[in-house]
Image 1: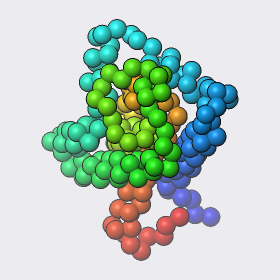
Image 2: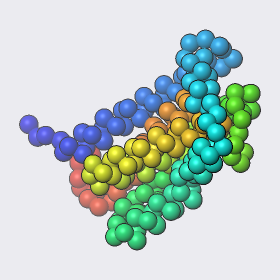
Image 3: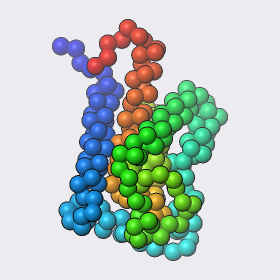
Image 4: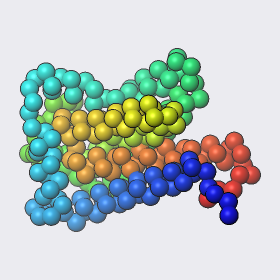
Length: 211
């Protein structure tokens, strides 16, 4: 019996977890619309805790670093990888991040969800973002980057994970997203990176069996 490569097995598990994250978040938001019970209520309570004011200095730091998950942060990350001798990974990061951002924007119409500051659940401390709150595009980009740089080894895995979680938390702190938007963003980003890897595998080795 032939064993699957460790990376392929890990990719399948990550894809399954990402699908559950996106689907679970979508169901939570859809079923909780207009409700103050269950997971929807927990989403609001957790969001209020994350958005609890922590002082002007913290506000400034969080507002400045939340854009790690923006298209500008994506470009900056790719540039940093390129100048430090990792041009292929830089290209993969740029492509996966672009796919994640596009995917997040494409699925936003599925749930026309107000952002926390629009529903009186917090104050917005960054420029007003466009589109529906669900899912978080910034978190999707950060998650895609994290998935790609995980190939660099333990250091890349941990730095990418911390960065993605920071961006997700910061998007809630600044009043732009609900926690469930972050969960969906993490899933969208991981799926985007996996899709990009699959495309590259087919292009580099078109005769390789896909499983």
